[in-house]
Length: 523
Image 1 (cartoon, rainbow, N blue to C red):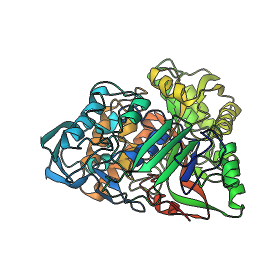
Image 2 (image 1 turned 90 degrees about the horizontal axis):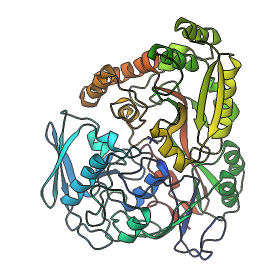
Image 3 (image 1 turned 180 degrees about the vertical axis):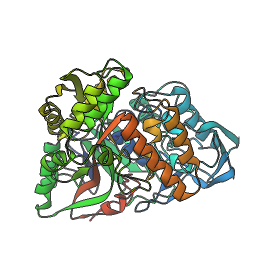
Image 4 (image 1 turned 180 degrees about the horizontal axis):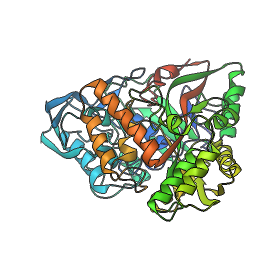
């Protein structure tokens, strides 16, 4: 999202100004503001928070999380269960249809998963389906997922992730990505909402779809507008002026402090899980040999000051991340603190480099994104640059690129060292392991280690909870000590701001990390 990393946009039924930033909402339509950008409305092409925010409102899933719950429940499915150790079987509810009137059958489900695997878009979620062998639709309401390894403890949760949206096989292509405007025109929606009008990364208008009968419930508000802002400053200003009803991602720490003191507004906090981290491209990063590259990664790990980033940049709204799995999840540990210490250690960093024969200062090209992970990214990565250069061991060339280009270039080996963020697909440690470190992973950074792959396979299929936690801990320790293909920096909570006339925001800020419009109401 991550992870992977995820994004959002909006346009308004109930709006009279025709779009853009500012302006008043008409009637009782709910207006949600965000700075998250949409990459694609085609589930095969995107793995980002902004795109997924929209998908969660308009597509059906076999399994999903009810607002206020992190317990997986049937959504478009009537029930799902393991019929064999390697076969997960779902039965659809009767009479499902898309908003365009087409019937929703098991063939659409098979089609949806097959195309994600076959298209295998580098910015898509296919890495989550690493354990999927095949999909069958023996009748109109039955879907059978055959898995490569038995007893997969995470596969049911995968059905609620970016891989899970069920699309209309009469609208989408089996082997090509569908343009956003064609998606909207085809009305292939069977979630609680349908899209009425769409201006990408500007305004999207939604209306309740009365054919939805899933776990997200009947929408409390029949018309919703999602408005995308180009800057957090404008999002904060409209929230402060109550020109919008809810602000969901991403306000700066200073903005949040200011809005907490504004009469008529409420700041809502939800469980954590967001991870901010650095990715190393193992092919293009500095270093003449794999040993030198590893030494450089370890030296960087020993040089960053997470506490300074947390306090000076984010005022404590993000806290230090000491492992590739955030705290609070089963099996999480503090591997990076255990291996490299809590504070920067220049002597240790220098020793890593000298032992590997690396000449200093090491020239590092470091890329970050200014418009996807919040406007504080520029301050965060300026601080990382300063921390590395203060050791005298590095010179850092810091550059930024906007998201639509960034998302393409990062998988094309353009950036040797770069920023990413992760928003969990489901509340389980595996969601921070398989997409990052399994073969052909989402990062596309050329990390592939048989020992780590075997451990990931083991934790995913281990039925004993205590043993599974041990394996998850072992993976974290090995990644910190022996590989460092990513460097976790910070972890954060979910934060939204609403006017006091809005209810239901707290209900959607749960551990599933899915922002749903259905429980939110005005008045």
